[in-house]
Image (cartoon, rainbow, N blue to C red; front, side, top):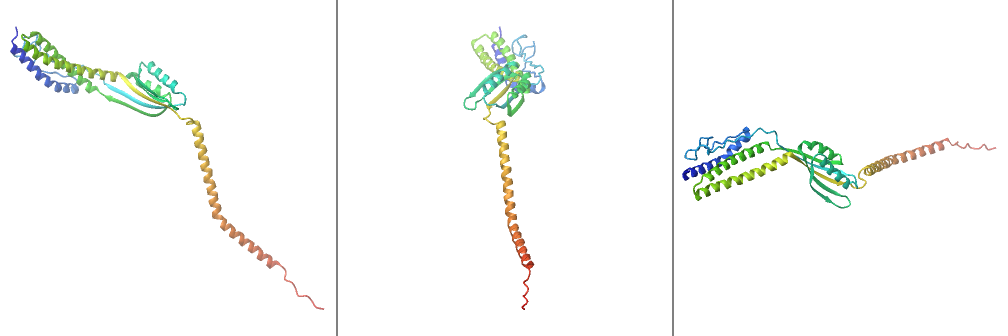
Length: 290
């Protein structure tokens, strides 16, 4: 039958190991593997602790992982007037065809309909899906991002394995407890460890989901009437009117500048012609008296 002092010593040792766990997991994130020597050895037991076979085996190793990237994109599309419903259905079909789904959607009714879709697709189909969605309209804005979460993923895995190893030891200590007080002390440590395991496991599930499935936010809105060819014609017409106005203004300015000189030249020419005519008129000779 186990000595209560041995159980208490093992619980104290586990408390020390739990304090050292973050440092061990940080080393794992940078080096690819972590090993926590919380005082135990495989099969050798803990000094003053349970016999061989019940020792603190807290060796942790994390297998090599590929890059973990969270891919996201936000695309704004302008759609032809009256095509909103059809293009939204096409966007849903694109998501389904590439193994994804529409996680969220909203629609704003009105003269010009608009809305947005949050599309989740496998990360491997991210680029293909994005290109097909861009073909549904005119791209007005686009933002693409990729966040590398590999280091955080490795760190969480190392911490999870560490806490799971401590949980196994505490369960063995619970089975060896000989009194209610010993059981309660071990149980408190066990509950804390299980809470940490659940929290880390939840974070890993979120990261796995974010890296396995890319997220594309598609904002769509119908274009105003005449915003394409009609708008181009109107712009050209306004440009022609401005050019005509500028031409007329230039002619008026030129005429206003030249007219005074032209009038002066005309008056001078008329005066010169008048003088010539006067000089050319024959002088009357005096008559001969007889």
